[in-house]
Image (cartoon, rainbow, N blue to C red; front, side, top):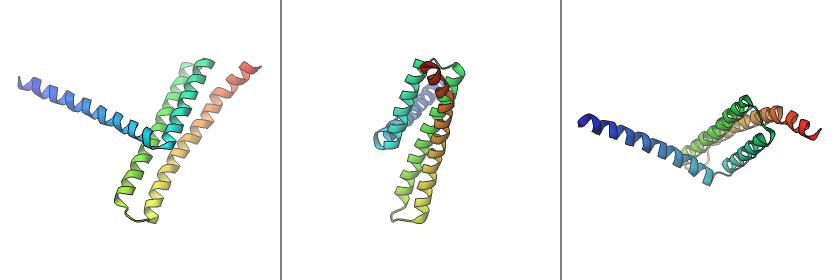
Length: 129
């Protein structure tokens, strides 16, 4: 029926949207050194969290911070790509856009490090003492 065809078309569109989004994440991971660093640190934090048996609340905090840092890095990559595409020669405005978006990632990363220390240092001390 026509309703079924519309429904199938909507589902296909949704599936395609997710596919494009995952493709974007993968492209950023392949092309951006900082994305690789963020993912590597995320994996280390997950392993440390498992080893130290962090609480559900602490896991939720870690997951939110992972999403913020990775998401900020994705936005940064996107902004850099758009600036490179529209800015054919060097410009102070292009530099500003790139520097500010990189700065936003740094703010999230520093906050995540601070929170990570607050969660993990007491647990590491307990293990060592």
